[in-house]
Amino acid sequence: MFAQGASGGEKRAPIAGVAPTLADLLVLWGGRDRLLRVAEVAEHLGVCNATVYRLCERGELPHVWVVNSIRIRPSDLQAFLEQEPVGGERGDG
Image (tube, rainbow, N blue to C red; front, side, top):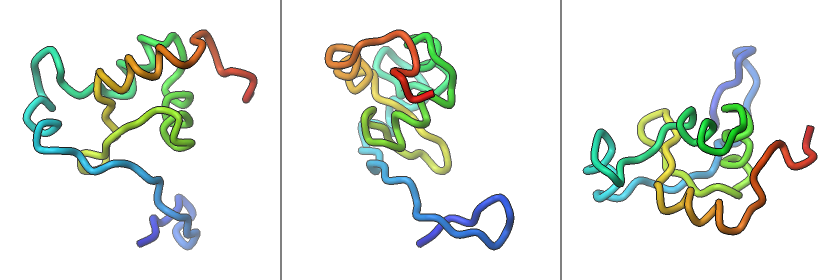
């Protein structure tokens, strides 16, 4: 399955993600362990939304797709913070 690009005829491979688990769906809208929106993760990391999307696209930040939205588990964000230096684009421009 391929996603259609903005120009209408352009095709590109879909971005790989992990299917949400039942537990992910149960906490989607509330609670301490709810899934985080890209904007929330960007604010927490001190970067722009595009940087979070790039991290997800490259597989550096685990994420799940809920319909057509990316969500990040708080535990995955914490694991990312423990292994990666935070504070910018990390030289990718």
